[in-house]
Length: 590
Image 1 (cartoon, helix red, strand yellow):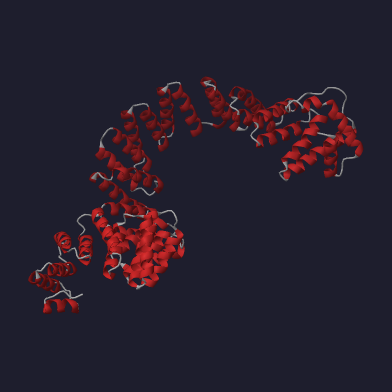
Image 2: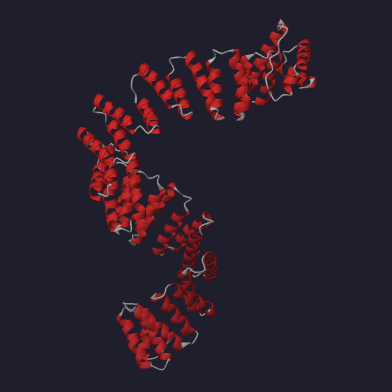
């Protein structure tokens, strides 16, 4: 630090005299080796501090505290550093320097400052505690034992220091010494669960399973109503490949407290390990029925079933456990949501919908449940329900792209295409990454614009949909069909329609579209092949397909067969005036 810098410091404080600055400058010259040695502390022996030195030190120290308070640690460090240059044994400044270094994760330097501080003032608890933290952060466990000895000397009533010392000994593999510390703790506090757990850890490290078990058995004898000790002991046996002893312990605990969910869960684990699936499942049902057992733990267990739901037995078990969950926790929305999921997995959509409705009624803040509910509404063709549930959800989650899409589809099904367009456009503007959603949005927009007679916007939307998914079979089919109705871009329509039949072979509607496009291209033989495929795959033999078949047969010179199929179309419910004319005039009419 130059004299110019010192002058700047004096200007900031406004209280350091020029004489004091000159004195500080001369002190600095005598200690420049300290500053050049990376903060290594050098004790300066010699003349005692003058009253001016003391005043300067005091002023610099409080200036350092002020800068530290406003988080200007760089300047604070300068002030505390100047104090130590004047008074190398100023332990408070050494401590503050260490704290600043610790804040920058510079533990080696902080450690040096603190080692000096505790040398100067060995009875300051904060210094030793900070030094212990430095040693722990730098993995200097061999130095920790002495530090905790000093902390215990200073504050013998603080039990944490004994535990810290025992932990340090544990990391140094000094297990017997650590056990002696735990013995001392027990003299001070009496037996506790923490002591028990820590002793168990050491006994197991020493491979003294019997000794660990013996201690737990003594705890059970002393207080047989404490179920946790049975659980600890059973876990000890299970972890050391003694399942029979573990089972015996848990059964004893169950006799003491039959409504312990944790005991039933532990028994389920033991039986599962023994391949006794029936008993394991029975214990799970008992555990799930106990309200005191946290629902989070039960949900986690059901989650473990999900990868194995292809097994019918597993699926049925998960379904029943989910049902029990709602009985044990009737006011928790999560239980109904999980039960709804399992009902869907078991192909019971109506029941699943009821569960999702209950879940939403209890907690409307879970978006995923609401989306599932609206999907089920649409799946049941409950258009009014989809609109009601969807718009209610959007009032809470307006920026959910999928919900905007689903509500748009609902309005489209209701044939309110203008409202549908609004929601679908919202969905496409809210999502930029999900190509599947974007493809479906623009495809639906193409359908809406077609029904609104805006053919330009319809074609643009379909083209946009195909940029996100060139193999969206429904988009390919619809776009192709509408082009064929207008008699426009028939080659493009034929390619798209043919591709849709490749993507979904056996789809009668797609085959009918392709047949109709070939008809418009005057490829009557090809059209006949594909319309016959469509009629074969359509079990109901729809009126539209029968009429198309008649049209194609007429141009193949089979007028009587054509009239016969037109009549079949009429019998199926087609009452269009054009069809009536075809039948009466026995010829194709555009």
